[in-house]
Image (cartoon, rainbow, N blue to C red):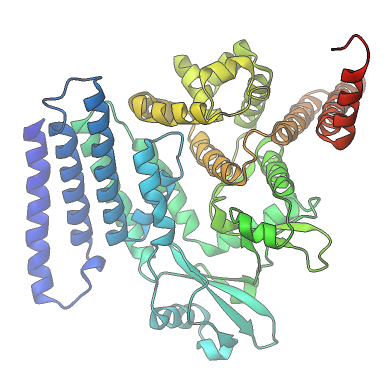
Amino acid sequence: MAARLLKVSTVATAVFASSGFILYNKHVDPNDISVIRFGRAAATTAVISYDYITAFRNVPFGTEEYWELKSKVHLRSAERLRDLCCANRGTFIKVGQHLGALDYLLPQEYTSTLKVLHSRAPQSTMDEIQQVIREDLGKEIHEVFSSFDEQPQGAASLAQVHKAVLQDGRTVAVKVQHPKVQTQSSKDIIVMEFLVHVVHWLFPDFAFMWLVEEAKKNMPLELDFLNEGRNAEEVAHMLKHFDFLKVPKIHWDLSTKRILTMDFAEGGQVNDRDYMRRNGIDVNEISQNLGKMYSEMIFVNGFVHCDPHPGNVLVRRSPSGSKTEIVLLDHGLYQVLKEDFRLDYCRLWQALMKADIKGIERYSRRLGAGDLFPLFACVLTARSWKSVNEGISQTPVTNSEDVEIRTNAALYLPQISELLNRVPRQMLLLLKTNDLLRGIETILQTRASSSSFINMSRCCTRAVARHRRSKTRSRSKRLQISLSEAMTLWQISLYELFLWIKSSTLGCWLSALINALPGTS
């Protein structure tokens, strides 16, 4: 093992030596040189690997000292990885953010450390922004906009957003890609692929090829802002029956692969409880509507916005002030679910909500989990196997259970890694989306609420019934399926009414009245 690591260290040393020679002869930004970026990544990989190899040599496995030391190694390794992402920027930050979102799949030391990457994104200079606009739109900024805020509204790993005013007075948001990301991304992914292979060579139990495969597939899509614009229009049309959902209108005449111009949207981030309190926004209503949106996307349509971190989900009062709205931003990363996968996923969630263990095993196996189906059920729900057996819709999430799940993410990392390599690639972004949505619910204190399960039940019922109707030509059979669907949806609505009455003032009054009756005490 040490000999293997020596080879990695030798490569990193050679890379730094050669890059130093290049920098000496040319006046360039070192962060733009591929050999520097690779050398930095290789050196970080070597240091982290050496730490894991040597740290536990004299510590007995399973002791309290062992687990304390492992937590410290996780933490300093995560900090090294964070520093690498910040130094190499671009694709590295994007992948680091993806890892930071996997709260219930990776050790807490990694996710909490990498979460800061959302606020550590690079910022392009105004000269660089002007250059991109000049190259793509063929005009100077002042020819297109009557005003253009030099300070960005927000900077992300691949782009930054500026507020501007068009010549006709309309206020817009202009998303401009960092000029060097396009050329660096493909090389960065090759570097990551090589280093993931090296880590797997050093530690055979840890296979993270799924991470590289996802980056390979998704990065070109996220770098094409015209694709993002099309996604925005498609989801706006698909969910037009939700009057609470707003998707900013795209200005196609001022959009290219590197520039996306859209209506400017005001609002507070979905995790900002103080903003909601100041503006009289009901936290439970927001959580319920978010659940409706995503249940519809995942179970019914199979077209899923896969980056719902708080910066991409705004909440606000409507201009009339009569209702609450959700503004969905950043439509670069979507997952299109195949029909067979979507239906198996629907049936798996139906089994999970009913605590149907045979159904859980059956559909988990169909989704590739194999004999790891109990782990898969826990990963998918972020609940313990005990809660899965009792019914996740019947048992509230406790703090001790949440701690148990996060601890198990570290204990079962090799098994989780194996599971993620087994399941269909479509599942990976859904797991990330689940974790991001759970994070929002945790902050809003609406986690595992009955309304979320009711929304999921409705959408699963509709999706399965629609599929069954499409597979039969018999009118009587279709009618039978529709009646069964209507009956199930009616039962769900009845159960929802029962829960509402139970939690209302009327429910409390009836409960007190029943308890006061003779013979009930």
